[in-house]
Picture 1 (cartoon, rainbow, N blue to C red):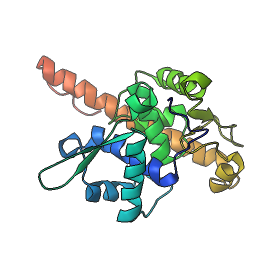
Picture 2: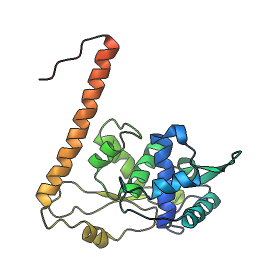
Picture 3: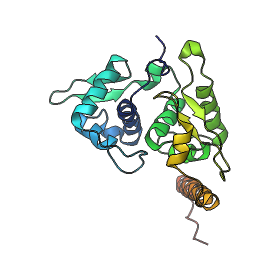
Length: 226
């Protein structure tokens, strides 16, 4: 049976648990699969989360059990404590790159393709924004036979230069509620500009690190700062 969120959408708790497992599998592989306590800490962290949630142990355990029944997570039995890992790419039938984007959207809320590329740096290095957009469009155009769309491009907000994307793991999105949660009326131009500056600074820092690594590999002296 295809993974269809139109008829069986995930709850917010299920989406947070699943996306957190997907995140930690790539960012902290040495401590993955996760125990319930580690998973709960990741679900409730205040950084890189929108919205911030406060799940308790019972809610996380229930979400894990429900996701296990849908073959989206797997319990790994241990000698002392059970651990959990996600099975999203296989369970949902999507490429790993698309799974990364969905998890980022589930953890951080709607984002532009450029923001997704920057935020995915520790998960997967996309070649360019076009490659991010290609996977997003594939998710948005997912056929009914495969379970229907898993992402949607939102209408461009007033003052914004780019449209944001949202996941559909929890069913259809309320566009008006999203726009109300992130109003653009106060200073849309400056906030959009700051977001782009932050993204560009992060990309420049990553490029500099790559250059220095190449210099080191080639045995070249580090270039003095300008």
